[in-house]
Length: 252
Image (cartoon, rainbow, N blue to C red; front, side, top):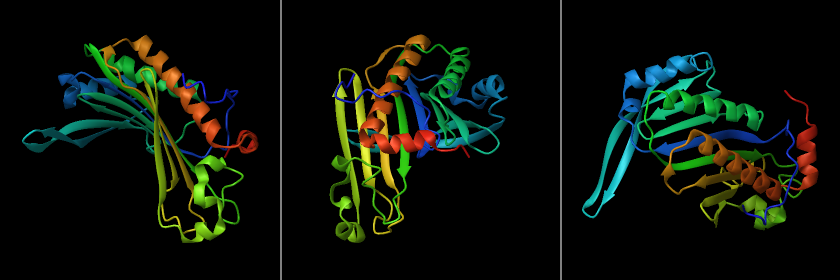
């Protein structure tokens, strides 16, 4: 998929600029997951890793020919004690979030455990969408520039200090499609660009959007494919020399 993206050997980037990783499966409505009792059963199966069980509200907006309407639906968040890992359960989705990503293998294991716990108490027939998102914040060099850390194709005017000092907003988005897979890349200086210490955003959001019969094995295989595309996209966005710096960084 997306053969124009370069092949890159998968190595652990100890100094990766990752801020958050999000995986989501959307499926046909499951009434059991919309209740406290149902979510509590899932929590019981996963409580060793996610001891906290919180109730939230999700606002759902529906657009029709006569206008828009909205309703609040309950959803449930399972987290570890410091909130670094979370599972969010709703009637039509399961979402795994972390700010402490280490390797795809460990992330995938947590995702499989969460989906298995949900599958044990539901009868999911249709998988509507799977998505995987990596949000990176790349810090500038001592001069507030990114020319050694971000490919020039993405920098535009931000490569020039004259522009850099006076930028008000610089955020771009591109969407590419290959068969059933969609790749969305957001990049730029989204937060206070005139601040020379502001980081550069590289937000890689990859998804399969074609509805299909739910299969746990196929869903995990699709996530493997999404992860492969996401990693190769990140490698396209940053120079190889910078990736080597990230790979050799000392863990905190």
